Image 1 (cartoon, rainbow, N blue to C red):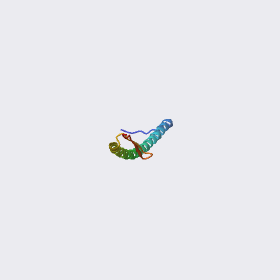
Image 2: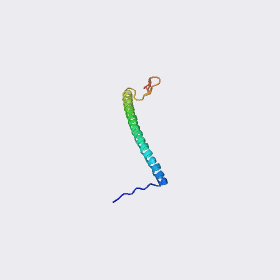
Image 3: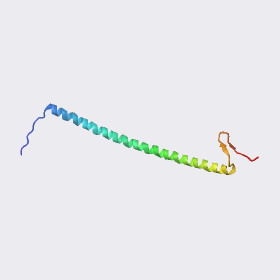
Image 4: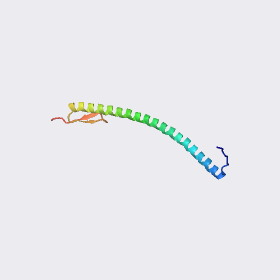
Length: 94
């Protein structure tokens, strides 16, 4: 079977070229977005790791506070702690 060659109409050719350029630009933009998403995911992992470290520190601190308050409660059953002045205020029997 023989092949025939024919020149495309300039209007059709222009439409095809413009849309091919748009498609190529979209591909490049999608690649850039994909890389940006990857970078953001890595950054989010770091932030989540920091969050976990702060939560761990918070849990340790509140655990220590609760333990110390329980110990103080044994000595001063009705006591209140004033951290600003460094005092414990408690009832005494008269």
